[in-house]
Image 1 (cartoon, rainbow, N blue to C red):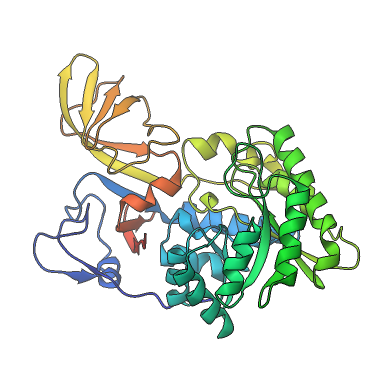
Image 2 (image 1 turned 60 degrees about the vertical axis):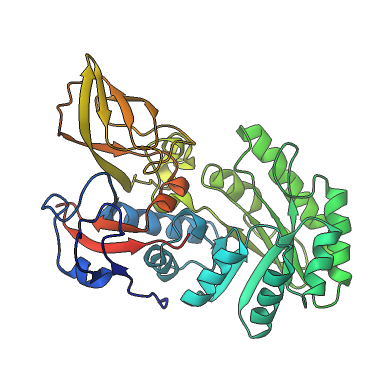
Length: 388
């Protein structure tokens, strides 16, 4: 599967790339095979490692296939067309997005099938989605209220999944009875096609809570089976509990229907050195696969103003901090400002470059418009551009 990916221009506006004059296309820049440390870049710089990201894509594609799941990885992790194309080429059944704007990006890129894992209530966006669906684009969204169903119907109708949520969570019906009520409204609404049930378990704290939620998801599907067509979609799966999703949803357990179980794990494309390193399901099931951290930031020590303290030229504008601070071998990051990071331990020298691993890829990519992809020799073999 190939996407229609624009060849973006890189110039002086591209953070981390050192182009004080002139411009170059991303493809030409990659073809020049610059080295990360030959003066083509300045610091800080976010880097994607080619071998790790390719291995991660292959691992998740094989995992989903092995367990009989369709894979619809969440595009919001990177919103980088080259990575989305690689996931589709590896066999992804669809791409998942979080907003209508992200769906628009995927439509313009030529993605054939998109699941919006969120409610959409904006009549402008719904009207466009309904029109594109009528033209043959496969786009599905989720609803958790009768009002949401009515909004979809008023826009012309779309395929929908009823979303199950959980107490203290975000969107989604809180009970099976609510799922049934919304499903009945969707089944009766003109132009609306009821496909199945979806949920998100990623924010739950432990295996017991996840398993209980997924059991309710199964119960919800069974409760509305008489409203569903021959093929039923059931969707779940962040990047922290996809092993429990597989255990709960795999197989053909809905009599009289063909089940398509859809896994949506997105952060797995690059993994990380923090949140997902600690929580990946492959820690619990090491024989089922492995993921490698594919993101790193290189930054320079700017000052050592006090004994035991170094100030590095990287901050919240450059690196994620919402699910843990960056990490570096032999050093400890204690806090971050907009453009400075406070580091203790070791003996970093002024001017020294430090490699940092990151926690939470979803809030790393959105800070960078262009990102070099480097091989094991530190040679740049591609340039990603992001659409946030």
